[in-house]
Length: 166
Image (tube, rainbow, N blue to C red; front, side, top):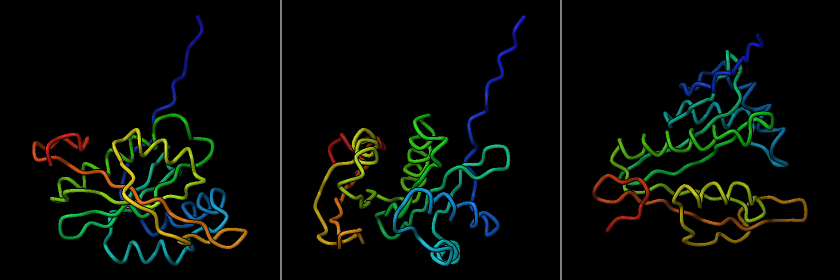
């Protein structure tokens, strides 16, 4: 008899100061112009929604979102290379959308590089829609890159798809 060992999916939990080195390492491995450790510390101090994906004690992803008034802003979401394409980034994104909705946000905004096609595909498949462009928003190797601005609205029925009448 052959035993099949199935890996448990990472758990979503609150970010802690002690997680910052692992988060910063994922950030550096993913982005050419990564956030600094200080930015992550500032997000914790600001009281944002700061979450990590924890796989048996190892941080394998994170998400940061601010919520104010009636809207939320997804500031950063990332999954370590070895854990991508498993649906856990989508799970984290949906969890964050539930938090935003529970905090009475009517919508969630985010910016993404137009060159980041995998992220754009994820966001669009999760109900986000393009609402604009911020010119020269991101640093790039050859100067600056625009940001595509997306929004996901929650309709009045509580449907997070944004496909309702709101």
